[in-house]
Image (cartoon, rainbow, N blue to C red; front, side, top):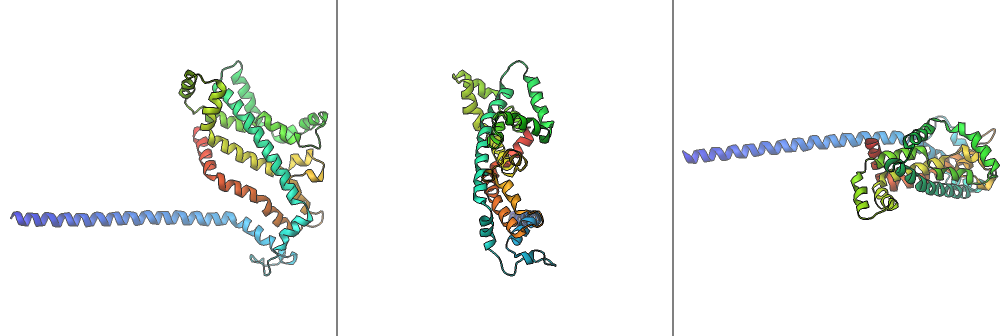
Amino acid sequence: MNRETEITFKESAAAAARTARRADLGHSARQWLGYAAAYGFMTVLALLFMIPLLWMFSTSLKSRQEIFAWPPDWIPTSPQWFNYASAFEKYPLARFMLNSAFLVIANTIGELISVPLIAFAFARLRFPGKRILFVLMLSTMMLPGQIKLIPLFSMFSRLKMIGTYWPLILPSFFGNPFFIFLMVQYIRTIPRELDEAARMDGASTWTILYRIILPLSRPAITVLVVFTFLWTWNDFLQPLIYLSSFDSYPISVGLAFFQGRYSVEWNLFMAATLISIIPVLVLYFFAQRHLIGGISSLGLKG
């Protein structure tokens, strides 16, 4: 009888094990199907968003006759790769991109110097009128940039800076209100106990800022750098207002020269535009991990 009970128990255990394995396999299959459906949906969505970019690339390889062909062809019959060389020969795109790179570097340095200092003061220090000044700083975010063009142009004109890069660089050294607000909200989430422990070890305010706050604020700083790059690289209105020399124009203004009064050389224009967005794509490729983490942390903590 004990023998029969032992056999029955083993058979029950084996059946339970088989059932558990089938359940695990079913769960894994459902999980993999869910992953496949999610990645498939995201791939289709990515392709939809890439349609304008793919069309730009296709147009950059077409002749002028193929551009206006109907129905349109996605793949040119004879790719005109020399359109890229023609775009550089027609206008000094390399010079324009170097000018944009200089403005990006200068503005990024200005924001990295000014924004952490101002944000640290609002988030950590105590001084009279702190709340009032913070509200006034935030209120400037409600003003459209176009309202400030005439006063700023008048001020820079009196300082004899029109026609130079100074009007495009100096404002960054006074801090962007949007970046200051983000940094303040992020710094406030860093425990004050770290500051107190550092002060007990003899650290000064500057040491706390540069040795504790800034290393912990890397996600917010990444967002600052990437947004400064994008806004400066794509800025068209201010360089058009303040600059007057052809050789000093950035790439955002240089691309406008491909649009004539009566016609547009779309193939060269698309080729030049694709070249101009390469630095943006490279920046996003290397900074995407920190950028996505920074945006998500700012969204949750802010």
